[in-house]
Amino acid sequence: MKTPEPNYRYFLEAMANKTPARMPLYEHHIDAGFMEKVLDRPMTALLDGSTAEKKEFFRRYVDFWRDCGYDIVTFERGIPLSCPGSGALRNHSEPVLRTPGDVDAYPWDKIEDWYFQQNAEYFELFAEEVLKRDGIRGVGGPGYGIFETVQDLVSYMELCYLIYDEPEMVSALFARVTDLYVRIWSRFLRDYAAPYCVCRMGDDLGFKSQTLLPHDVIRREIVPGYKRIVDLVHASGRPFILHCCGNIFEIMEDLLSTGIDAKHSNEDDIAPFHRWVELYGSRICNLGGIDMNILCLDTPEEIGRKVRAAIEENIGFGGFALGCGNSIPDYIPPEGFFAMNRAANEFRLRQGA
Image (cartoon, rainbow, N blue to C red; front, top):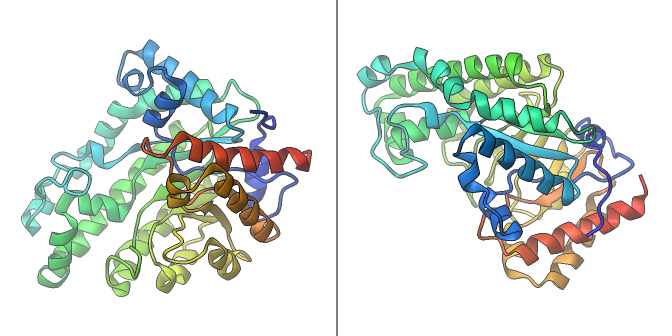
């Protein structure tokens, strides 16, 4: 499959809410297991192997993005994985924090060092591979979001009870997690951000019909933390993407007030992608456009038609980069992904930039 030569500067133009000469592509994540299936070569085991094996992982990983026509490659390492006893969201395990005393006794001051002890080599090897390539840069940073980390410590269901039973504990917990994020992001931007042209946070605040928490709780406990992270990223000279699933129209103005430069995630059952573009395209870049269900269920011919229609409908609205509305997990049919990718790259090649 022929693809344009990578040039991440087009993606930066889109992040500045401009229409670049060539439409960028964007994926929040392409799972290593998906790549392994397509390439028929080891990927996931390499990431957990020796330094030499990790190097080979990043070579194959960045090659995959380049060969599919992307100007950027996303990579992050999750913060909650360094939080002792966490997993209530990720693994449905028992909450590690149940009382105000648990919050006070938790080793918050040690997690930053643990995080970088566990992840510094990954960031360094990613930088080594990306920075040797002229046209490609990274997007990402420390992974997960403030809300998701709180859920990973107390569980979503318990958090809903705590909001009413222990509101002071909830405020203290969000404050602790936010401060942890600020410390980790500050150190990441200082020491490991060289290969990244754009940073981002993924924090799903909603589902199909509404937000997961009351609007006033989101505004009081979560939005100020977003602003602190966005300000740090902007001070480093980089734009910021918020990946946020769900029906979040009621709090979008609050999210925009944090200074985000782009928003990713769309699901047709919530709203057509173009609605997000119509409402917010004059202020931020919009990323995505192709519902994950389309990639899973439609024929390659149908996917190609829908990709071309999405490009035609959205390309004139400032910042826009096409991709899946969520991500590319290992269960996405390869023919669905490549039908989307092929149609998009055919358009990009015709643009000639």
